[in-house]
Length: 347
Image (cartoon, one colour):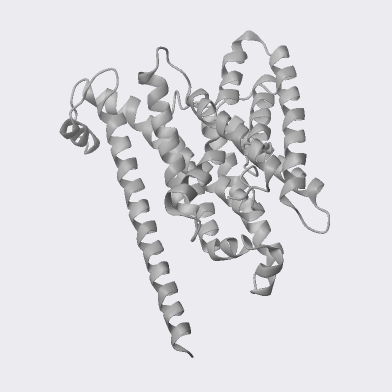
């Protein structure tokens, strides 16, 4: 090995170490920001509750006024926001990375829309409520994802074909939802509308258990495939040459990502653009090397938590979190579409 080769190898090693340190720093910063965001939502709302009082309430102390405000109003909202945001972030970046296209997000290609349409159908036509609606929403999201995957299969799945089929199917589902809402009686209309905008109003702590199980189970499976997922960013031929079993990996990633998004949608409705935005934001923060799964989950949690807080307390009127994230995500979607007209986009 020549001296020039040794120097290049050492330089490459230093670059990898620097990238790893930067990645670790940014993940730590995101964790700190998320903890700060949770502290903000627990302490400051229409009234201020000192942090020590919040900690005493969380420790089980009975403090008149503060106990109800923190335990019943603020804590469920914060917990559900963090869990749903993490699920959306993980599901979105898994699709975007596997298909090597930032537009290939579950909330763009119709999976979230499918879950919403299923929920509206359950409420309006089947007169369901509570967990039954959530189960129908999860089943509908999984069914729509399977249909999109089957329709886009042609000796394999390419990102462009899957995205176009997903967008077309989403448009059809939106029409079905609009028709159902026109037929909805007034007493079910308000509940049905919640499934269209995305909201954590009325969040309950008992909703956190199934969401946590889904996050641990399907998020853990995604993390176990993170190396294969990163290899697939280099292209299917290279990934197959490096030993990645493409079919098994794709199916595992699709099932896990869809399940995460469907579970999150079943609790909060389709919070617009969180799955779409989390991956690209994480990629800008930590760079394109290494897995984006954990950073995207943290970014998704932050997006939902802070957008919900802004929608409740920082705007002239109160808005559901889905409206705030929609305002943030729509300009980025337009930018991506314009950029993709010039060159093929990638995460």
